[in-house]
Image (cartoon, rainbow over the protein chains, first blue to last red):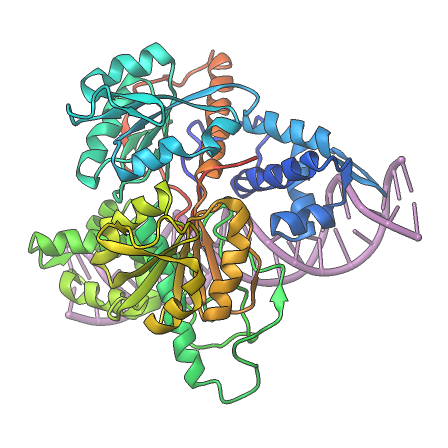
Length: 254
Length: 254
DNA sequence: AATTGTGAACTCGTTCACAGCG
DNA sequence: CGCTGTGAACGAGTTCACAATT
């Protein structure tokens, strides 16, 4: 699932399982919605439903953070929002650079989700001289010649790569050399990085292929659907897990 | 993770583990690159390196598909490309619709990765009447009033949601009612769907938050770095896992 | 009475290590 | 001899089920 293996055998700090870390943002989103509606407390059952997981998992997840609930009552919404934000490091400011301002890079720059939680687009960088100076989402694009300086001047530790696949590894190396230690990669390539650098990837084509696999399987099942089990129009299920919360998987294999 | 729970207790078909399915596209990509360079065979070691996994995992993964290698030699590149493509259902055509043609939807429409492997953008749909008729990536945008007809006329079973969060659930329900059974969701919301429908999500904000968590942890470790363990400038490691292989995921709202 | 927090059982995924085969 | 294929050991993650607590 996630990325960067734990360098240093196992800083026993207080190991929160990776799968749990991957779900914290989900809980935080649900909690924020409750907070905006001024809901004071939630039970694990309610919150789990809102986040699309089951309540046992949620309670176990929270147990890694500490005992923030009250038995017989539930969790204080505001308090939990704060605790999770702190745990995720969202109480501080994270300047981010986006490299590769094509269609996708521009879409990311315009994405509102950045601004909201501690993330700030510190700079947009592109290799095309014709782009330099042009504002995208109100931020002037800078030329990649200045990448190192931009990273250092802004104290950037998180970089987003939205370049074509062919340029990604080189960009990645420059980012890392300049001090970036976390990378979100949208280019369809495997990046190789030094120990201590985390890479997460978002790959549209892979997601579609996984869906196609399951889609194909469904088509095959239809034929064999001579037994029970109504086909379409099933009952709405609140539970169907969504995405690789931690990692991967999606539907089931049979 | 994944989605749609197993309807029908357990079609014992031939269970390929979900984690393996999520990696097949990765192998396929590496193999395609080798194929273009006319490399005839690869060892599990070489292919694993190219895909960013370890060789034991790769061999185990392939063992679920069958015995496609030759001991003492390796795997035939072309043959494996075909077998994996077939397993993933990429030997057939998958018409896809994209709903929500904002910055992101437009970027997705322009994304080259679609065309390549069996996926074809059959239609672009948006709720804004002003968009109707405008071509994006050479495809005219259609109004969402016609969503059901578009799905049915094109035999679409895979839908991509790139709308604002508030519209996503409603769009999802219309897609599903019209016959879509696989959804790739870019909106920062938990979608609830009937059994039998697969949802995968891509959430930029979540990915960034996960990176922030690890980034924060690194910062904390620095202070405690009075013992051994050189800080920056570590040796290049081919391994650092990349993202939630199965999954994926994007940003956050919170 | 309600709901959390958690040990224990279980399931899924990864890695080891080597037998089997070309 | 080299490399695949895989049983067996291991580890991570999930679910169960219930004691603890308010």
